[in-house]
Length: 207
Image (cartoon, rainbow, N blue to C red):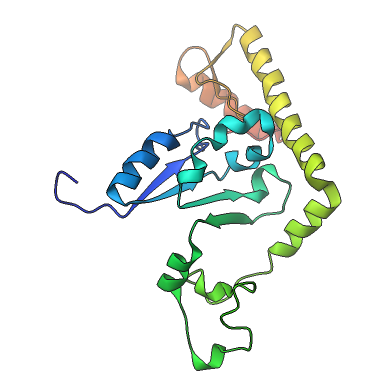
């Protein structure tokens, strides 16, 4: 802004890929509201944990954002690929991507209860991803999905304890949800060699 540039969107992250770090949504929301900047939240990984009451702190400030998305194929047992997107005002997206052609007209146009998703994205069509979401939710239910997420978080806690108890390793970031970042003490080459040996065994996948 000071340089004369006009920001149009701020993309915050809840649960970064590398360390599952969280941006301060409340602080960013205050700035975006003052400057009339669209605030989008990328919660690709951590978004599944919104379903847990014990993780309610992650939801703080979300009532002030303009859009949010998270991947159901990460924490919620839906096959790849599948992402959920929430918009405060869908009309702003529809106005931007509107595709109104004579050969696309149908009798349900204009009915708000039947969204026309060709106006919500750049591609004209999309695959029927909603079916696998429905099947997963109907099969496991809300409590089943919550139990699955809690199990992953619990397993990460157990692994964190193992790392702390072994003097050969050290944590390099606080454990967050199901992510534990650790390394072998000493030169980074030791960690690289260990990772390669684990990959060669093909028993476990790590990055």
